Length: 502
Ligand SMILES: NC(=O)c1ccc[n+]([C@@H]2O[C@H](COP(=O)([O-])OP(=O)(O)OC[C@H]3O[C@@H](n4cnc5c(N)ncnc54)[C@H](OP(=O)(O)O)[C@@H]3O)[C@@H](O)[C@H]2O)c1
Image 1 (cartoon, rainbow, N blue to C red):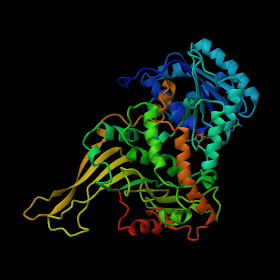
Image 2 (cartoon, rainbow, N blue to C red):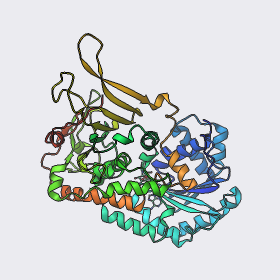
Image 3 (tube, rainbow, N blue to C red):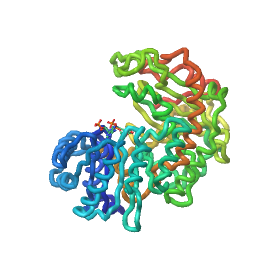
Image 4 (cartoon, rainbow, N blue to C red):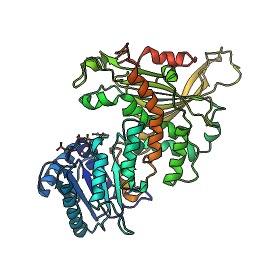
């Protein structure tokens, strides 16, 4: 893998990973760091410090990571390249809640800055359970580890989930801002590291073809779908407190909506882009309780069949209450009330144990004004533009063409672009770009405080109604189906239907 055109290695720094013995570190962060190394995007002057609870020597930590990388890397590991990373690994043991952890970390950072000539810049990555985010930042501040100078920056990457409703997100923002400047905070959303997600902006703003039709005059409605075939797996403890609206819709799906609906930014500077994104969220009104009942549908999977195999219902999954009311499916109809989109509904749906794993955005255009070819109303399929996010990344335009032959028979044909044929896409974790951006100080793809709060402002009234009204019909969809009947009715009442991937 050669160094991507126009990109240089990030500046010298130390990366400190809190939660270095955790799942995220071994599955994503270390493999992403290795991929950046392969791409020539890491500086030579780099040190990586893992903060773990268990006391271990640097050597022990290196051996553990060396074993893990061989299991979790997304490509085969070159011993020479890995050794350069391995030699720069250090371990700092300590509890997140213990001030002594931070004073020892400060001393270690001074040492590694000298040995590796990192210049004193540090990226703190909080790969920890979310309850610790605020406390770690507070103690970093108290230990004097967040102060910047002209030559040395200090940044903090915060993992998801960022709060669990509007009030907790606001409180967390306040805790972070008591110590850090907003420009030091990188709230990560790994969805925004995906190639096809980044490509939505390129598709829209580097091509003149689509912009003229990207509005209420030509677009009938937009559907955004994140469908999973997996159930809750072993994450029952976490999922019981989250549900799909918190886990998927409020963060990732609202970001997808932003990218589709935002105005062209005046530049590709981080705040120019984020200003436009937050304006989209501001244009979505909070639902009143009676609107929640009409515009939002929740569901929970029961037993069913996936890939020919019988699977259990949510309430029989490990670490899930047998009478759980947690939603594993949500469908929303949202209105972006601005000049471009007024009257164009954005339908979002996401669920676990659905018929197929698929993430995509479908933009449905209005049908032609006259039916010239003998079709009747309802027989003509409108044009659709489909942005496939996963598993097969690509873009597709569906249009009508005459079927060859003596009669005027119309068929739907596809113009397709597949990422697979365009370049290497497989050997990545989705964290490479985001890690690199946080090291070079580009926060374009990260959430800003106001974006997070606006997203929770929209989601919280829905969560409140769902928490106060017991769902009487759970489980209301079979594993392997496409969700509850009420979600079909949400579309059916306005003469539309969910678009199923072909
Ligand atoms: N895993 C993923 O793929 C993924 C994906 C997206 C986002 N995230 C987010 O990333 C964060 C980390 O996820 P994860 O799956 O890696 O979590 P995890 O496996 O639970 O790891 C967290 C780590 O924090 C350590 N820890 C917990 N309490 C501590 C304390 N008081 N003092 C010192 N260390 C402590 C644990 O150490 P011990 O090992 O000693 O218990 C553990 O290694 C979470 O916010 C999660 O929501 C994870």
